[in-house]
Length: 295
Length: 277
Image 1 (cartoon, each protein chain N blue to C red):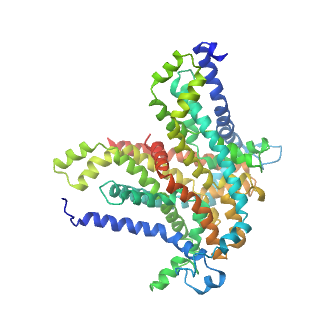
Image 2: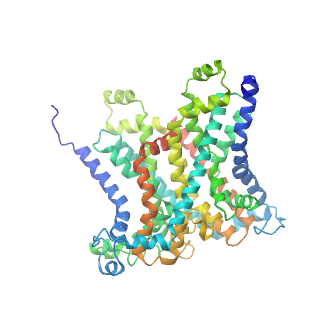
Image 3: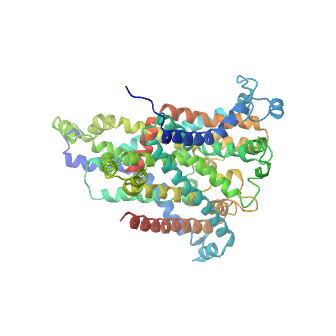
C-alpha cells in the first residue's frame, strides 16, 4: 500500500513518524524540565504539596546572600585547578604517545582505563587509599619513613578538596589524553615536516605549529573540564558527605541537599540556574581568550 | 638491518608513562591483594602482601549474597538492553531523517538536541523529578529506562557521519525498483550503520552501568538496586570490613573493564568521533 504513495507524500509521513517519539522524549525529559526549572526558581515549593506560591526574585536573592553556598562554590575552583593540570598532563602524554613509541597502544589502553570505571567503585576504592589509619597510602608512607606526610587526608579542611581533585585527575586524565591524541593525529604531517626542515626545534614545532592547529580541541577539552568541575557531585557526596564541617561541599552537593533534604525546590532551582549561568559566562570568557590566542 | 640505538628521549617517555601507570594501578592493586584474604589474615598481614591463596572466593560469595548483587546485575542489564535498543532505533531514525531529507524544521530539531546538551543534566533533576513523579514512574525500573531511552546529540553526530558516507545512489537505485522510504531505511541504511551502532551500544552500556545519580534519585527501593546503588548500600552497612568491601568494589568494577578491553576499538571510536566533530 505504502509503495503506491508518491515519494513526496511518503517523505512527509516518514519525517513525522520517525521524529515524533524522539522529539516527544526530548521535550518531556530535557526541554520541559529546563523550562520548568526556570518557573520553579520563581516559586516557593516543598516538592510535593499541591500549592506553589509566587516568590519573585526572593530565591535568587537568597542564593546570592547565602555565604555557605558561595563558600561551597569556591571549592569547585580547587577542582578547576586540578582540571587544568589534568589537561596539561593529558596533552603531554598525548604528545608522548603520538611519536613512534613501542607499546603505545597498550599504554593508551592503560591510561584511559580509569575513565570507564564505575564512579561509585572508584570513590570507595580511594577511601581505602586515603583513609588516615589503615589507608594504603599512609601505610606506604610509614613504611618508607615519611611518617610526617601521613596525615588525615579526608579530615583536614585545607587538604580534602585537593584529595578529591586528585581523584578526578586520576579518573579523567585519560579522557583528555585520548581526545588530544586524536587531534594530534589529524594535524597534517607535511606542515610538521616543513617546520622541521626550516630548522624548528622539537619544542618550537610543538608550540608554534602543532598546538595552534589544535585550538578547537583544546577549547573542547577545557569546555568538558570546566563543566565537569562545576558539576562535581559524586565524589564529595560518596566520600565525605561534604565534611569535615562543609569543607568539601560543592555547589551541586548544596543544590541537591537543598532540594531533596530541605525540600526547598524553589531555591534549589534558582541555584541550578545560577550554575547554568556561571557555565555560560565562563565558557564565553574561555571562547574569547582562546579565539584571541589563535589569531 | 636497523641497529638498535639507545634513545634517551624515548627511554624518558617510557619512564614517565610507567610512573603514571603505577599511580593508576596502585589503588586497584591493593583491592586485589586484600579481596582474597579472610578477616584474620587481613588484620594480621600488610595490605600490600599477597593473599595466602587467590582461590579463596569466600568474600566474593559473601558479597554476592549480602549486597544482592545478582539482583543488581539483572536490573542493570535490563535497563541497558532496553535503553540501548531505544538509542539505536531512535538514533538511526533521527539521523536518517536529518541526513537524507530537507524540511522546514530540520535546523530547529538539530538545534534542540545541541541546546539541551549544554544544560548540565544534574542541574535539571529537580524539575525532571516532578516529571517522573507525575508519570508515576518514581520507584520503578522504568524511571531509569525512559531517562536513558531517548537519543542524544553525540549519537546523532556519530550516525550522521556514517550516513553521509553512504552513497545516495544506493537509495536512488532502490527507489527505481519501487522500494518505499521505510524499506530503504530498514534494508539499506540501518544495516550499513552497524559499525556506528556497535560504538554507540558500547559507549551507552558503559554510561548506564556507571550511572549512579538516576537510580539513586528515582529508584530507592531495595528490589530496584543497580550495580552503583547496591555498592552504596553495602558500603553504608559494612564499610569497616575492608576485605569484604574490596571484593565488592572489584565485582562492580571488573565487568566493565573486561568489556572495555574487548571492545576498546569501539570505545575509542565513540570518544573520538564525539569530540573531534
